[in-house]
Length: 258
Image (cartoon, rainbow, N blue to C red; front, side):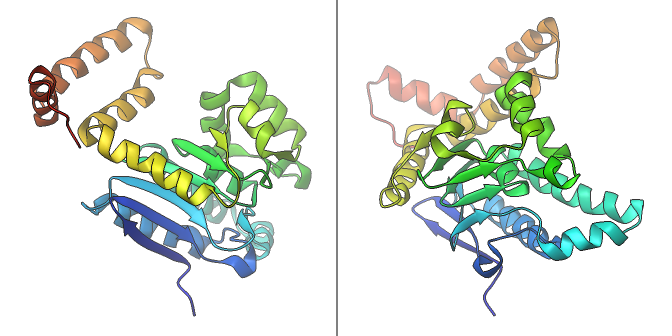
């Protein structure tokens, strides 16, 4: 039996590969647990600077699988809460990871799968990809992804996507600012790899982690608190080895490869 989630590193780019193609990479409790396990492995791998999440098969991720939907009807509130927290923990791991996370979407990203793509720092998709937050169509709610989506695209766009549950293509997803670029299917692998390589070689790992952390944190503070926090982080960053190394290279007109 194939592993549910594969992991490989190619020149500091770590690939987390969803490998449940026969189920359109649909999310089950066990599948989410395996994604969390492999993601933690990628985070702790010193040879991995940028993480790419992609999938084998025709779909990126089609949301909850049938067995999970059936279980929801029989579970107690406590069981459903534990299952909800399980997915919340995965989304939080990705959103708050100190490493940059890129979604490479080839095929459908529906419901929880659309959420998985949405919470990554960058998302690239092929023209044939389809997206939908389809939960309200089956009497469910897009509860967890909502928290991240409003941050990403604002209330008005989030309402349109979450309340209409419309199916939209990659170009529309780009217009909604859900994804960064639409890339041809025969080019996306190299495109994402080259994009990840620019992050690997062109920016300090410490700086990327601190900047990502700050983008999350400043949104939770009022203006004065956010500015005080920013000043403290500015001072902290100046003391890091990466900053000292970068400034020294700049002053000496040396090309720096991170």
